[in-house]
Amino acid sequence: MDFELTEEQKMIRDMCRRFAENEIKPVAAKLDETKEHPAEICKKMGELGLMGIAIPEQYGGAGMDYVSYVLAVMEISRACASTGVIMSVNNSLYCFPIHTFGNHDQKVKYLTPVASGKAIGCYALTEAGAGSDVASIRTTAELDGNSWVINGEKKFVTNGNVASYCVLAAVTDKGKGYKGISSFIFDTKNTPGFSVSRVEEKMGIRASGTAEMVFADARIPKENMLGERGAGMRQMLTTLDAGRLGIAAQAIGIGRAVLEEALEYVKVREQFGRPISRFQAIQWKLADMATELDAAELLLLRAAWLQGQGKPFEKESAMAKLYASDVTMRAAVEGVQMLGGYGYCKEFAMERHMRDAKICQIYEGTNEIMRLVISRALLK
Image 1: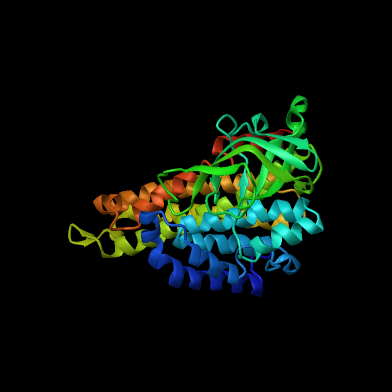
Image 2 (image 1 turned 45 degrees about the vertical axis):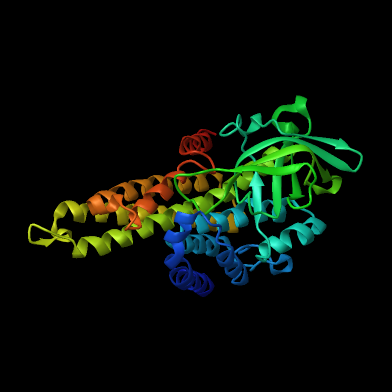
């Protein structure tokens, strides 16, 4: 058993750490305050190959492995969770399904610009009545000549307000249940009948746009179906497995930022004539935080390695996402507690980390659903 990263993996981790420290961390608080999409940062990440890390160079990607991918997301998220999830969705929820299920022409036209960082991608799945129960989606796609006519609404679409391209799940055969769901690719800038109706006001990840999409007789070219008709549910589940690796990595990045800030603070904050780092209660909090974050990272690296080897990783990705997000939420709560009143004020980044951490327990499948995924795998 070898726990050593390859030279290439170390290279991308270190490069991302430098980039995050120099280019992202100094503006992270401002991005959170203004809710501004970090367009210039995303452009630079594209130039560094970070927007399509595991996509072959033939289609605009960096041609690296999934371990490199999660290492990169961890480092970017350590500086700014909003930027981390923009990058994660671009890689996992948009690039992955097109590379996995798309044909060559679709990859050239719709994957290459996004994997190379020249455009942003998103994934439209969730609806007002279909969250954890994704088989209940009601957005429909009806074939009319050479076009699919789309009607319905999608909620909580990360990157939806800035994306040029989108992977969409819709019902093509109403009487077939989950077997009647299909996937499509569409151009958000050139699709009549499509609009973004609102961008959500959120507690955290505020520089990452979360959009509501509306389809009113929106027309998508017939050839833009992704894979086979009726295969959407299977594609969706596989895509979400991949997406959970990105969210686990995002969570661990936030957790590392929490630990770093806590360590820095407790060494200089004095009470009763000595630094609070000298108190056992503080030491134990730090020890638990560091141990749990290391354990979460090992779960994540295992799942990423399995995906890269083409092995089943559904259970492992659910475990990584579940544990990493729970661990990070606990760390963030303890981080705020260690900083006391300062932890509750925007003068310190700790309160932002706590707000950002919470969503990791919710999206890409709530942690309650993760427990169902894991238990189903165990009981097979």
